[in-house]
Length: 299
Length: 261
Image (cartoon, rainbow over all chains, first blue to last red; front, side, top):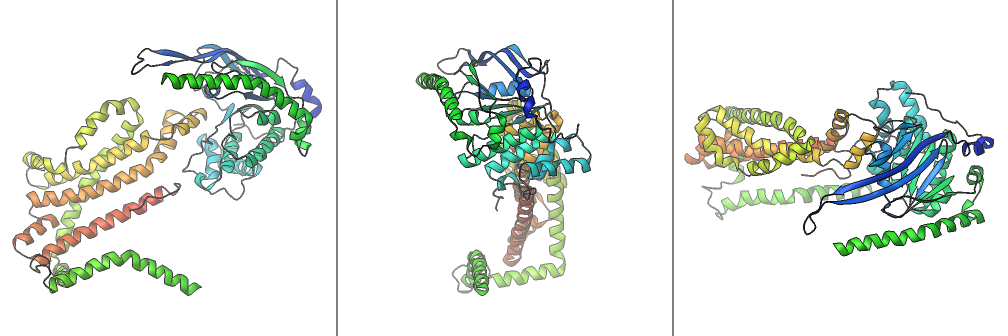
């Protein structure tokens, strides 16, 4: 396992090049379709096919922060499972650095909405989990775990069990656990979705700092427009089920501005982008609602 | 302030033992005032005196050791069988689905009802007693272990998979620790049931042990001694129960609310 590459600070002048060198694609989703077969029961015994994703194409560039924005039920979780290597596309392909994803791997770090900390382990043990599991040398791993716990601001809570932590602290611990094995890309599934708004904004800001310090590529799933604008270099808006890309928007706010501005959310560019995304998403929201209501009728 | 706190905590302790104390007091008074027939229920003090004599004469020790040995061996057998099987069956979902109906039916077979069968098969010696205790103890350990393993939060399994753990590692590092509290609950119920069956087995076909002695004293109309035997079993039950609760608590420190007796 390689050492932690903390403080690989992105050179601001290089930032432009990150988004224009086509050869530097970290994650590629190529025309992915995912169907589920649902066994019928009761009055409708026929097997039905549910199409969760329909021809989704997407690229995450190296060092990019890409946010997937979509209404609920657009197949976000399905997509994440495939990134994780836990399930596979019905057709199309997903690859990292040009290599198709065939199994789970530590080149991808997944952060779940519900934290997925092991409740019988303390904060320290949870963060240490992957390193301990791979028999990393004790001294080295203790150092790394301490470093990361400090980075996510959990010092003093090393010996707390998850039930003793707030939601925000749990997610910090989960993020630290993911950073221990230094994955090249972080896949985050509505990681702040269960947090109240103040903690949420704080963690968003900290995530930007962590990205700044580590230079990771990040694919971030959310249904909050505000969150998308605040975090993303680019936002990919998904359609309601079956999910595919509706449009991809470049957020016209630089990384430096986000980190340095007192209140970037009140910037006119911020509001404009938010409004643009809102109009894009509005139609999908109502469609998603119709799908749900249609289902309720069938039931 | 401090004195008030101490007084409060004493009051709390008093409250928690008040019910027991009242019962014991009633036990002493009722036979003396002839509210109940002292021939069946002698006053507590005379029972305790008889108990003390049983201990002094060494008779109590002999009886208790015989019984404890049976429970120990029988219960150990049930744990040795039920724990690994429970973990295996709980872990392999398909296995669990196929076996579950059978297990549900089998566990409904009250151990006492098949005690005669065991005596028929193994005679009235140690083997039948130990095997009935083992049989009775198996079920709760087994069922609770299966449930503990089966009900591991699927998100944790998913997370472990994404962290590239092998199946064996997931079992050892996720399913096993997650199941422990439930396993210990099963172990606790198991010992309680094993103690019950110990007495039944000794009463039905025994020539030694506390259960046999209780029966024997009853036939000899030695009420004080009989009650000493009953008290012995109450004490055993309490000791086992609370030791297991302590263990359970230790195993579930990470849970919000530790189980209570």
